[in-house]
Image 1 (cartoon, rainbow, N blue to C red):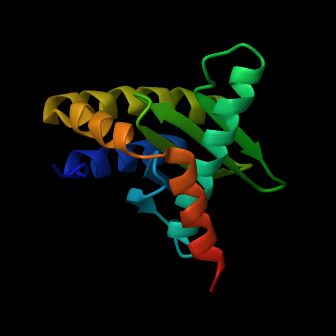
Image 2 (image 1 turned 90 degrees about the horizontal axis):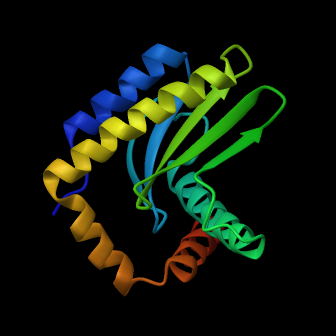
Length: 154
């Protein structure tokens, strides 16, 4: 079963329109880029997807160490660009790249709304069950690290 749908791309495009963000992506827990919208000319989407998956895996372990099940949002703030990453149904990650010109609060709010739309789309397709069965067969952390290694070996 295919994960991607035109509705996902439309939801991401709507998110960009409402926030003014530069780029939005959906990344699988395994570290694969599912779909991206906006400007991706300034980075390697394969590398970023693998790194996002690795970061979420590391964050999950940190959460467990402090007594949490997990954290659902990561926010990386740079000097001029920021990355907001949120988990959708514990299966996909929504990545939003935005600049100082956009409000972090607006990005968080719109990302939450978009995540609900995407979760509904996944449920309609029955994708959750399919992805869950794939995740049970996959060592997520090992897979993400292998992807990262392949990206940076060139």
